[in-house]
Length: 292
Length: 281
Image (cartoon, rainbow over all chains, first blue to last red):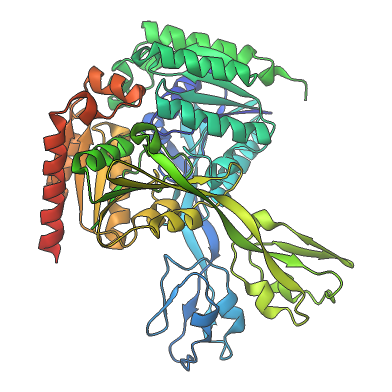
């Protein structure tokens, strides 16, 4: 079982557009959307949801006014300032630590487990897909990412599919850490800008700490060829494979509007040819062909 | 005045709007970059960093000589930070949310707190613009405490511009909460629209007045504009796709420096925000 995770550091560099194109090219893979916070892959995949499951996060404190004597201990012990005037808990501030629940002398605080999202198993025209939707303003995104990746793995095993394609979230924090642990390899999609370079450097450093091999691809490369060069130079210096450059082309947006990936939309275009070339490099790379 | 700049989808132009707005206002303004996972404002502003502070979050340290292995700390901790195996105590400080529960329940006073590094705060300035950002330590999972720390530098006598991280979960909420206005930066594409709708939901939960900036406004389709119409979301600025802007961005050059005529547009954006905030009051 191999899992390829697409990351970027910076948002908006083209992770989802490329993941969906790879789905077309891989022929037989399980798709996994690990960007549970602002997931977009489903917009191109039109998944037909077969199974829908609630995602239970942690507990949240709820003070029962009938039992509360107003002693104020909960306010005192809460480090997150979540207990507000009138002994009401601010759900957004509550960290779910349960300290007030355990220490309330009247046992007046309940700790119901909160449903903070949903996850799905779907069918798409490229094969099965596991995806999720974290509720707005919710926590536990890392936990949900771990869950969708585990489910994608189970699904791949049951269907005897050898490859999982995972669309990752931006950044380097909790959901990204949850996305890359145990992955076979990462594709870092970056752009030739000062921020693209800066953010890619941070995410590759994270990947190095987790000992996951990275391959780097520069999207919109012709916007600044010198910067693209600088990115590739940095990648080589860090011993990361360089997959190549994709030029800026409005055809990506056009295909997105049609709900298609670039390979489906314009299979014979120059861009599709380049993406195909990049995919071939990925799939024949040493990182993806290590003996397990 | 505190204006936060958010988007849902990443890469729509939050940093562009934040830095150009700050540069256009010139003085009495403070830029707080709360995208601590991938802070970028400094790349466009090039502020002189005058102070660097490392930020820690408290995590437990257990004195095994005092510990009687009563497991009270294990029981209260919802994050599985402490494990007791026989007469050995194991702690996993990277999982700790710093609630302090273990310390409160330990009957032997065996637990003290030490720090786990969250990252650094860097403070500086460029001409009359004050600048603060956070840089999350690579490998650190929890960004909200560092974001809150950056937020704490907001000053009531200044215009504070907050560059928020992408998404709609806890890091963005930490950046946007208790701000006077949220500028939502989007692009007119299906991804842009989908994530904008989520961001609007988040802003509504917080009850903050908000408006749109549409970036690359002439690519894509008209569905973002239509949605804005239906939802009564004011479109406060449109930035067309312009290769000159994109190339300047790639080199770290703000729009208002490359094309000074944009300064007026950003000042107009600010005065519209000011008006909407006044109306709300």
